[in-house]
Image (cartoon, rainbow, N blue to C red; front, side):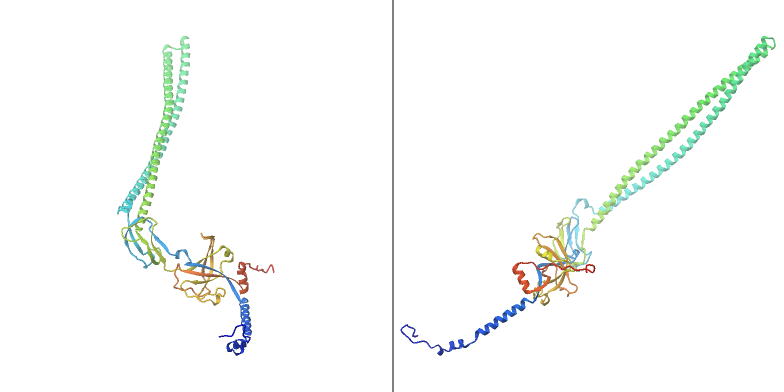
Length: 447
């Protein structure tokens, strides 16, 4: 037992203890100072090391062009599935048959629908040709009526002119008979005076009287002819107007028939156009029974299965992945980081499933990352309030792995300014944004 009671006045001799003497003799304080100074020096060196500011974000692998992305093969028409020509994973070329559909609508069930429609179209086209021939005949008839009317009117006009000339002749003759009758009357009066004076005989008097009576008769006959000639002029005018009215009516009737035929022709041409449209639609619809591959690719998933199932217009049938495509990356950044991004900015990309060792501040020392450049930034935010940024492969960097597939996960780092590690720590502790102010470049004129 240890003699530790207060009554024991003797002191413990620590020098005789080997463990205590070894501890007290060790110079641990100097080594500790050296270690602390070394750590401080390392920390200072680390703080002055260069650090690349970056924005980290997750995203997905997509294709560079819209037509290279996975697409749905849809049925344009409604139908019933009769036969499949592909299965999941098959490689197809553009124009290869995916499946065959049969008709289910009543309006298209006739197997000879296109032939019957084309026959109706042919009959309507013959009707159009018949109407055209009828219009030609009516045009010929109108031309003949116009020519005949011109000849008839010319003939009536000549007859009218003849009547005017006859009237003129009869008027001259009537005037002559009037003069003859007046002369005969004057001679009779003179002979009557001479007879009373016993200078002329009764026979001569009677002869003059007979001559006077004959002159009066000739005057009456000439007057009758004159009046008849006047009546002939009226008849010629009436005949001229009658001929003109008759042919005008006949020409108007022929033109009316022509316009009615033209109206029927136009209606028939409208029917022809409708039938042509129907025949073309029926012919195109027959080609839609076979659903074809829109481009070279792989059938990744068949959405409709089984025989006898019906599909609606626009319903997706299968999914095809294009055979040739250019990869790109879509990443989403927060609105606070959006002003820091611009087109052509360099990005480091890490693909899921691809081994990588990443040092976010030292991208040049990272392993398993690939280069990219920003080629598009969306102008609107998604439902979560983030903005989409599209990244294309950097042609100056090494190529992206060929084993990548569309839809794979991606971790991206958008590289910003090169700063000191100490400044970056100070910025993050205080919550300041990265430096995005750019120095203005002075052109030659401003210099």
